[in-house]
Length: 245
Length: 245
Image (cartoon, rainbow over all chains, first blue to last red; front, side, top):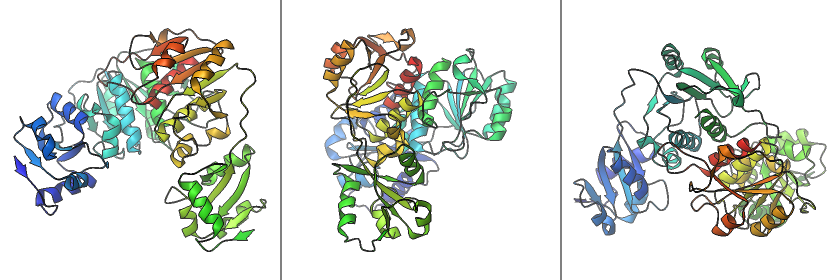
């Protein structure tokens, strides 16, 4: 057990940078719920920062750092970090050798809250993996983590070249289903259920790219009888995801 | 046309308070998209605050106030208010004399982003009205307005005593369908379609109240085969809303 009382401590300074933006090897989670998820799913917990009064709750861990409320707030995105922040190593990512299952692909989805909510929905629907494009919001952003509610501990998330992945998926016999904002495609209610598929959601404003629209097996949309011009991408994703299972 | 150059101007001071929290008769919208929606739907536009360089775009209106970027930022929740903020009068709310149609009821949904997204989804699905409980997040909060994307101009939103409304709806022959977090209810995929219904969504953490669960005609849930403990309420609402139409 270590005790750190100064904000100028080099570990704290390093982690404040990780908390804000520059994450290369690790990220921070806040609160007891996410910490329990990390533990239950054998995440690699590098450091545990707790207030002294909670130390007994994590006494079985070797890597505890006792900090003040002030320091904990500095490591946290929320005003009330619930007494615990933990540094978690990025999971080692090895792409699947074979593709079969239910996949979610996010092409340039920008809002962290949307990305997190969509991954949480895919987790609830027992999807097997998530693949995000290079320009999709950071998975380890505090807002993404908050809306994922620990789902990144339940299913693997890969950051890949999405167009080349779609090619591989098609070669493996996985039906690639891209969602569009226009109605020049199949209504989602008319799609036949398949066992192996990849659902592709696009950017909030632009939708999927034209390259993706060309490459995907099926284009689908949600018919909207009302007056809203579009759906929030996380709302649309929820409708697609649960219609496919 | 008026020109205001001082932040100490009494109208600006009054509207800064409206922008923040205390709204009794009017609220503020930002950006050209929402302004166009307000205009297209005959909202009562009290004042239009614009930068001088945009004045020609709104020259047909009598109630234009030219302001500086600084003042506009003070009236706005976003850092880039796109050159326009408008003060809109609360719509006059008269409850329907008769109930028939598709209704959305929100019981104590707390997050403004969730409330806005759910109303936008109900609008996309051509619901006829939205009723929110006293404790549901403010409809005219800037975050709610941003996620609604103008849907409050498309369908009426009433703040009411929800339990008493449910009673009236039942008496009018509207099927009241309350959504639950537990699975001691009907899976939503097994529900028969009805013409006149009210979908009731509950609070993010607690779900619907026990009084509501007792009063509603049908309890329904989303079966989740995966590992996420729950769905985001706006994601769940999207699944329910589009399954019912």
